[in-house]
Length: 198
Image (cartoon, rainbow, N blue to C red; front, side):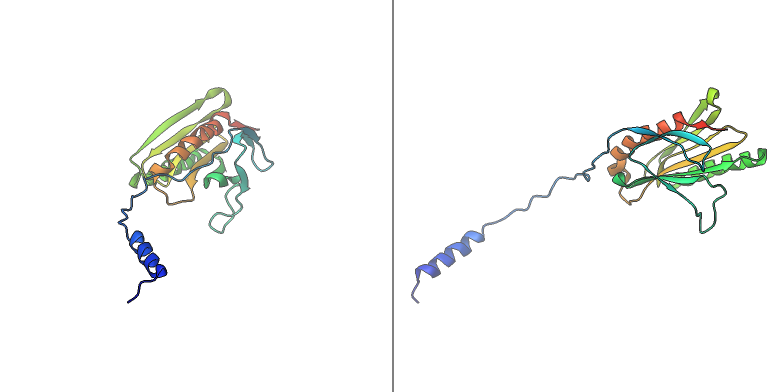
């Protein structure tokens, strides 16, 4: 058999391509998140009788259906944060009597405690702003719970507002930790700037 230069070159390339290759795994990382700029604006609408400061990157979506039925109040809305794949669900209830108030507080505790199945712990943080007649609780949850931050605010006689932060993802809590830490000050700002309007 006669070896031509082309055949010799082909064998040389074949042997050069057969060098041993050891793959190296990539290091574990989290998805890159582009955080929006921290700025705030006043939330004030015709269908809610309160105001607060909300992040400018949150879009207000009015919620007109609750499980295919009309909500108990016209003031149901979500603060949608598409950049972070998050939503703050807000529902307002007018208080008619003491029984209403007791049931709303009980429901808020019940909904927060449903997350104890997955949460490592729930830290209830009291809210007392006597000058503004704003009282309530923040439920700061830790662990792989569906909602990491919930709250209810009330004046105990007329107004009751409940809110909860959820992410539209099944990503593990540890990879969301930085995003949660980014959003918590915004939720605290909502709680700390709420004003009832008569």
